[in-house]
Amino acid sequence: MAGALGLARADFRDVSCSGATTADLTAPQPTSDGTNPAQLDALSARTRLVTLGIGGNDVGFIQVLTRCVQQGVLHSLGMSGSGSGSAAPGDAPCADSYTAAGRDELRQRVSLAGHRLESALEQIRLRAPHARVLVVGYPALVPATGNGAACTGLLGLASGDVAFLRSREQQLNDELRRRAEAAGARYVDTWTPSRGHDACTAAAVRWVEPLIPATDAAPVHPNERGERGMADAVLRAVRGSS
Image (cartoon, rainbow, N blue to C red; front, side):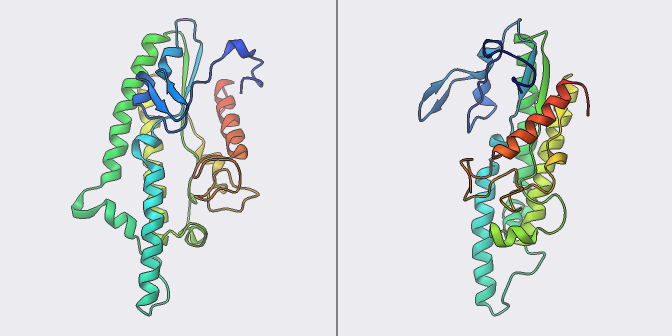
């Protein structure tokens, strides 16, 4: 992005860090390489553009997906052992575990992440009052439509859980959009351009790596192709196009 905008190295700062939550925006973040200062400390009255991608770690999407994979594999083994041969298309053991007793745990986490983003955007406005602020949404982790049969084979997810994970990620993106627009920031949609490039697609086209990556990307994170696709979406927003 900086290169496309013609910015010199001294003109921008990247303080993003793997595993960051909204708490790490305003407080130090311990890492294996030491402790990072609060990310918002990089802002000042001179700041003119802020891009922020946050919320997924507040919800715990990596842990959620890992749990869903584990439950999907166990469920599949159980169904095979019972003589049925495979899980039924609507089976969703992970969704059942997160919505037990009428309580939708992930929906509550998404709502909490939205509240935290609202507070973070207030802090950004105070520290960088002249900056344009762009909240970057998340690309599709699982297929954007259908029952995700490819995810059953590649990730071990029960087919019903593919729809569950998709709906919860969409809820998070919707929450990020709502909070961004309410704060006068712009939301950047990376879900739409990433459709057909999720973690369950072929290695040659996917933007997001599965739990066992085929590239240097972290599990269930964008690879180089995905980062470029997301950067393109942000650049379009910076330049004023949709």
